[in-house]
Amino acid sequence: MWGKGLRDRPDDKFLRAVGGDRIASRQIDELIGLARGIAADGIVSVAEAQVLHDWLVAAQSVIDQPLVRDLLKRVDAVLRDNQVDAEEASDLLSILKQLTESPGGAGELLRSTTLPLDNPQPDLSFSGKIYCFTGTFVFGQRKACEEAVSRKGATCAALTQKTDFLVVGTYVTESWKHSAFGNKILHASEWRERGIPIAIVSEEHWTRFVRDVH
Image 1: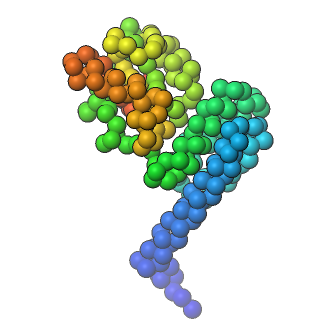
Image 2 (image 1 turned 90 degrees about the vertical axis):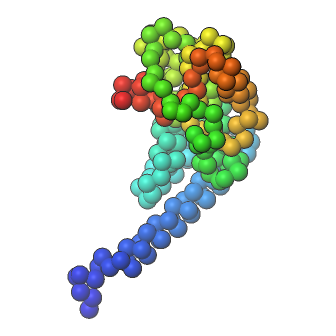
Image 3 (image 1 turned 180 degrees about the vertical axis):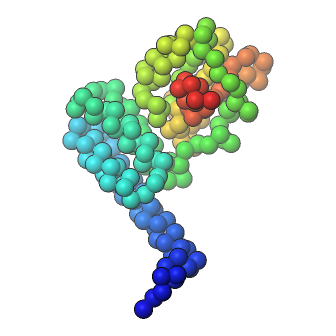
């Protein structure tokens, strides 16, 4: 009979940790397959979104994975009215493709070390400021991001040399330079180097200010 004191031996903790990593790895592999299947025909139906939602709910109870939590939030928002309109479908399809096509595997997002973000990232203000958003966002669709800053007195517009803040969405892969939104990031970076006062910030940084959690 094993003694009670043997339950938490270091070796046992190590084995549990390894087992947890293997489970997480299997879950991510499964998510890649599911995302690839849904994105294959270039359409995301209500039924497919619901299947993805159910998988994410089940997976979240097994692994504590930020990717799963973020994606579940997005799918929850899409299914809120039990419909998937064209904009929502395009948005979700973009995320699923990035999960399957990213060179580093599912959820391998471009970190701040490879994005030309301001370093350090500045404090953000809103009243009278001009914001531009690029990429795909955990916060919600781009319209939701624009509405959030508009309520705080900011203006949203296409990227120009008068833009104060360019916010880059969390779902950005290593191939960002070759993507449609990559040009905005490159232009803003070039202007900044020429002394034009435009800040390039991550969605994570922006979210802390727009939600007044500094």
